[in-house]
Image 1: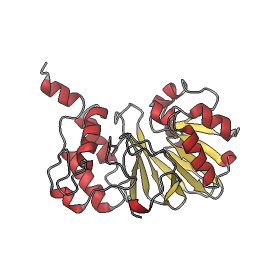
Image 2: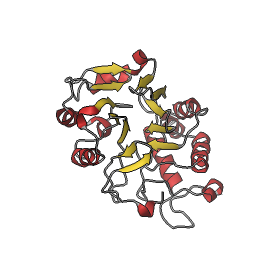
Image 3: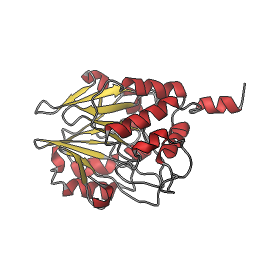
Image 4: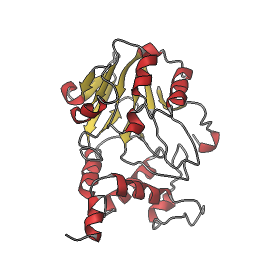
Length: 273
């Protein structure tokens, strides 16, 4: 699907039963991407979003035809307010006694500060797998300190979509839901503006995001190693654009593995102690 065909005021189905339900503002530069997964009348919501985005996210969920009472889990891959800020509003409208919040134990400590109403489940207590009633599985893969101690990514075994949280994220004024990276980008030196389109370079913006959000080069490379063996159709980050082809995924993974000076490493390099 091309970006020109998309209406960002509506939900967008990115894979079978997987919906982007985020808020789009091309002038914002920082986009949060909540995702809804539906399966035979059952649903889960990944990284539901901020308080300010709640009305947009909820409207799009309802427009998918999803019965709010069928949302069984709210999955949070870390605990930042851009993911978790609208938890109380979600709880109020979903109004399902079976609803649970699912995250890593390191995250649930902080998620309790958003709400204690909904019981918390820890992914480690589930063997790092969530099963729908149909048998469909979501696998949780730990990416500790990328960027929080309890960070993880979520892999949908049915569609092979990897919900990557902050990994592969971007602060991008040249935003579109589907990445604009092309094959030539693999041979180009990242710079502020693309020499072909004269628009902000998406690879540079991915690098800048990881440099400031990830705590260290070692943490980033460990996270990338954790997903290296997966058969991935789409990488769906919580910020930035979808990496929707193997070629784009390879370019970005290769670039991220080559980057140095991430987080504290950059600071120590500039401030030797």
